[in-house]
Image (tube, rainbow, N blue to C red; front, side, top):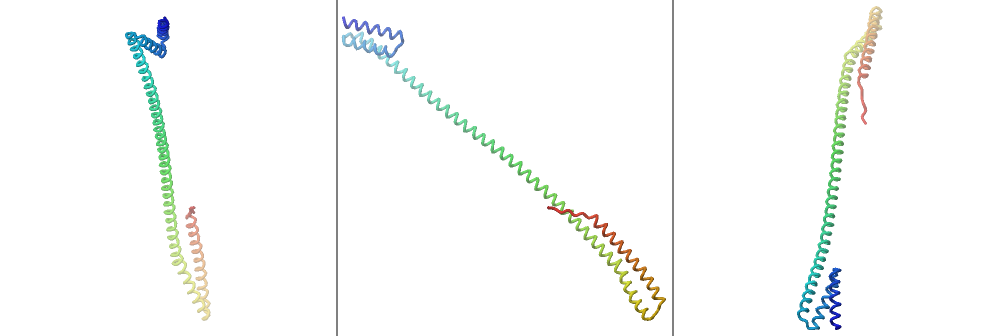
Length: 219
């Protein structure tokens, strides 16, 4: 009687566990059933429920193993995604740095080009300035040579003549030759006026020549 009631109770619990889909409870009930049948010596019922117990346990273990595998795979996929994201971030940072270096290199190249252009332009300007100064200096030297030639030829000769007249006047004074003295005095007067006019002309020409020469100072 008591065993039969226990059997009925366990079987009812088994049905309830099936209805509620409580696998762990079902497994526990099946174990109690096959243990009960084992104690009663009911071999067929023992083997039946023992087999059901083993199948359910294997099934639950397989499912648990699958869940663990899925969990491991999920963690692995998460790590892979994380690693890929980190790798992508590193690649983006490298590309960003390369882009920045390219920008800096481009700016440096433009600056160097502009600086070299500035140096070339300044060098050309200095070269033209030096050429102009050399040309001006050469012109000044030519004008100086012309002036010296004029002074030597057009002024020195009259001065020599006047010096010679002075000697003759002294000689005539000693001889007391009044007529020739007057003649020499007139000649000396004309020569002085002519020489003075020549000097004025040379000075006027020199001033005009100097006024046409422009010298620029360079810092």
